[in-house]
Length: 247
Image (cartoon, rainbow, N blue to C red):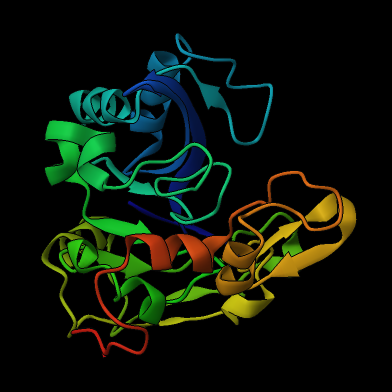
């Protein structure tokens, strides 16, 4: 499950954009797919090509529910697993303010039990996620969201030693803190969607300020984009500064 190229180790992964209609609204969710071999990747590609053009974008759009994605890839190989990507960003994520859900169960239904890890994204860190108790059972991971080579490694996951593909999946599933040590974090305040704002008017606000303006841009009156910090506060059932069990 681990591949080497010029002394760099790789796991076969991709990110897809699931667009579907559920519970009375359009949903747009980015998900990461982890695969154990190139043979399995070929089978996944062949199957998912029925739901979208895999060659049109580096992150293909699939017209299928997120839970159907889990069912489909597990039907191909039981070692494949799914991780919801940058779960708080407003436009394309599990909990996103615009097209997301309020709980993971609403999105994945009976297949929630096959979700072992959540990617926190550049605009949030583990401490922010600890405020939502329903996420306690998941391993929180951080990736670099590298749209260009210079962005590689700006966030990362640190393990106690070199571990194979199945070992990584097992660590995520069991939330093994002795083998999964910590994540390397970007400052969430520097993330594109950490605060609320309106790009057209070059304005950004804290959640408190946004609520004062009734989530409308005070300059033009259009709706503000509700950012990660605001969304976390909406779903949080713990106070800011709560120290999670991963500390």
